Length: 221
Image 1 (cartoon, rainbow, N blue to C red):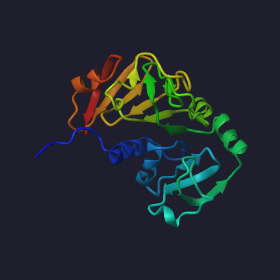
Image 2: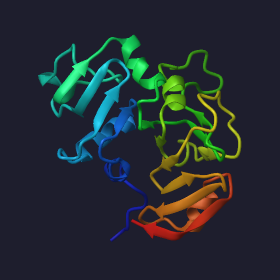
Image 3: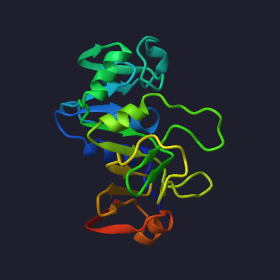
């Protein structure tokens, strides 16, 4: 029987959900970040923020046909609400962001540099990008948690020494969750904290540009 290698999207989502703490206000970006919502226990008091004006967002609906076209995430997907949720206009939504009210944000990325620089809005050679509110959010949140694949579709590292893509924000990333590992961004450098199933330290280092510091408490699975 062949052993699977790497985390599934669901396993990645579970690890990110486990990182979130009680009483946090957490912004959730589009794409992979939205997958974490079903993995947060309902009794864990966390308020999820969507930049388009939802404070108290719940998981995406299993059946989009049952959704309300006026109740969509920033990724334009039908979502639910938690009890006590509220709606605000876009300007007030960014008062939360710029006012330092976000304990964390969960974002996707094209690249993360070893010093925590983030690129997630535009690919080189593309005339247009998708800036959205990521620049404000990455700067305004106390912690920036990244969910992404470890390498590009053609096998190039997405964790790099220096960004080659247009930057979203500088020195902002706190922790990186990929399909192959969980890595913290520290002043000492990138610390490898957990290996995905079927991955070794050598495997992860080979697909990561900067040298990794191996945590004394390195975990697998």
